[in-house]
Image 1 (cartoon, one colour):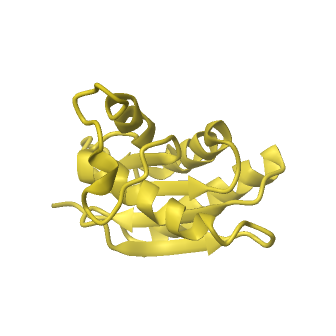
Image 2 (spheres, rainbow, N blue to C red):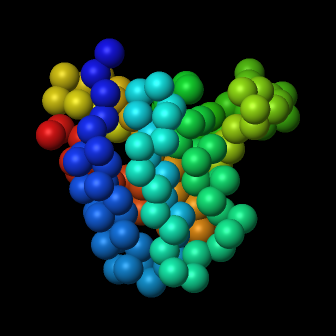
Length: 135
């Protein structure tokens, strides 16, 4: 299994922080490896304390199911195929802000989770971090 390096995780954090600054939002950003182990984390000054756990869970949720956390959310609505899945795995976050990181061969090597603003902003910031996934 390929894995995310600390150097890559730092570049991802930098890209996410830059996008957060561009949007004018304060974010918590978690980067996990392929095994969902935390590699790097950043809490921007003024970011909500309650979003720390959410950011980490968004990253883990994306990696556990190899898809954006928001996509899982679509499947977990009442009557959906994955209804109540957010209660599994010690608690998942099934709204946007968690994205997978892939290497140049499209192998998943980790995930990013972002929380601290609207879910649209969270997803945009997390997605900004994937520009380094081909390193």
